[in-house]
Every structure is written in C-alpha cells, then in structure tokens.
Image 1 (cartoon, helix red, strand yellow):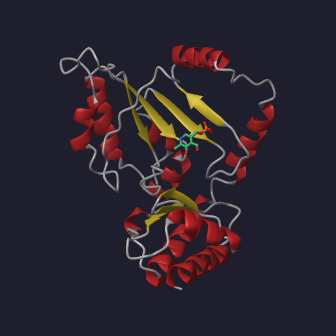
Image 2 (cartoon, rainbow, N blue to C red):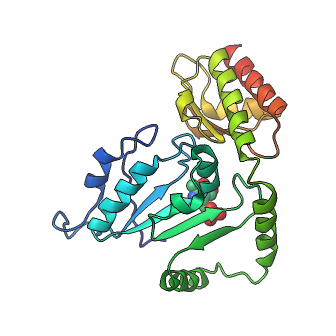
Image 3 (cartoon, rainbow, N blue to C red):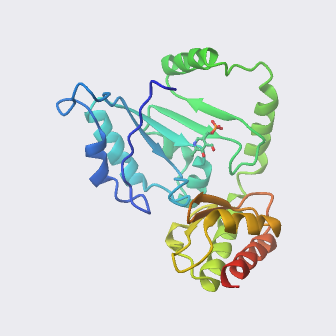
Length: 253
Ligand SMILES: Cc1ncc(COP(=O)(O)O)c(C=O)c1O
C-alpha cells in the first residue's frame, strides 16, 4: 500500500496519554505543508497489541473520534481483538465500535478461528473496500469455510475469553514475582503480556525466545529486549504456570 503514510500518536503505556500526541500527528489545514501528505483518517487499535493488550478507555475513544470528526477526518477501529476489549471492559462491542466510521474485527485472534476478518461500515465504504480487495488480489470464492469457522467461534469461544485473561494474569504475576523483568501488571488487562528485559540481564529477547521454544514455551521477541506472550484457547492454566516457571528459570540461571 505504497500510497498510505502512517503517523502514530502517543498513547502512553496504558493508552491514556493520547492527548499530547494526536494534535502533532494530524497533518491537515492550516498546518499542512505541501511536502506532507494530508491526514484523512484516524485509527485506534483496541485492544492495543504493542501496549500489552490494554483496553483503550472508552472516554478517550469518544474524545479522539470527536476531535477527528471536528477536523473532518474519517475514523477507523482496528478491532482485531475487540471481543477481548469487550470481555475486559464489560462494554458490548456495539458500544466500543459505535464512535467509528469503519470497524474491522478478526476471528483468528482471541476467538481462535483459523482465519478470517470482517469489515463493517457504510454501504459506500464497504463497496469501495470490496473493489480495493479485488484490485489487490484478495478476492476468494471459498471463504464460506472461514465464515463457518467464524460462526462456530462466535457461538462457542466468546464466553471463555475471561479465562484467557485470567491465565495471562497468572502467568504475568508468576513471572514478575520470580524474575527481574520490567512488567507493569496494570497493562495485563486481556490475553497479552508484554515485558522488557532490563540491561542488568545478560540475555536478550531473541535468545530468551529461542531458549524458551527449546523447552516447549512459545513467546515472541517484540524488540531486542521486549517479549510478548499470548494466552489463548489452546493453552491451559497449568501450561501458563509452567511457561512462567520455565521463563523464570531461564532468566535466573
Ligand atoms: C492489531 C491487528 N490488526 C489487524 C491485524 C490483521 O488481521 P487480519 O490479517 O485478519 O486482517 C492483526 C493481525 O495480526 C493485528 O494484530
């Protein structure tokens, strides 16, 4: 998508510091210079993956969308993990999605389907999206298979999301108690645990990830010293406890 240029706005580790960032990220009149592309869209990701799966406070979502609308910008909700946000906040997905012009959700994340995402918006924007999908080679005739899996996930996997969230808290608590990682437990609101390896630890994230994999624990290096772990319907509480103890072992020996 070479014609799209993204600028990010800072939300802070718990997605609460967006106000300082959004103004300077928007490039629109009268601040616009000829060399900059003009901002047309503001996107919010909820839950926010890199921030550790935190739920963006809905009051902030409302303010961001109001600012965007006042500036004549469209709004998009990347809700790849919107059901996790709903389970953690207690707010229905309809309420989380309502302030946005367009919303995407994914069935392959917390809901555990093998693939499939869904886009919701006005008739005109969905028609435009279908055209763009066609142009980019994304059309597929056999996607009823994915739709069936998505329906199964909606019927059977929604209600168990709080289990994943509880497992993530158990994992994070054991890890933070046993090793000197930098881990803000307040960010563990859903099924993602992001932690950092301080310079005092000799090991870096790719090495930790490789050593954990060799012991049957899959975590990914999110950066040179940043690690992400995700809980989901295929891992049990006992496996999360074991994963934490394997990581503590690797980080303390
Ligand atoms: C936050 C977020 N948004 C969007 C996507 C894309 O989802 P899909 O490939 O199902 O469209 C992902 C996939 O990993 C994601 O993590």
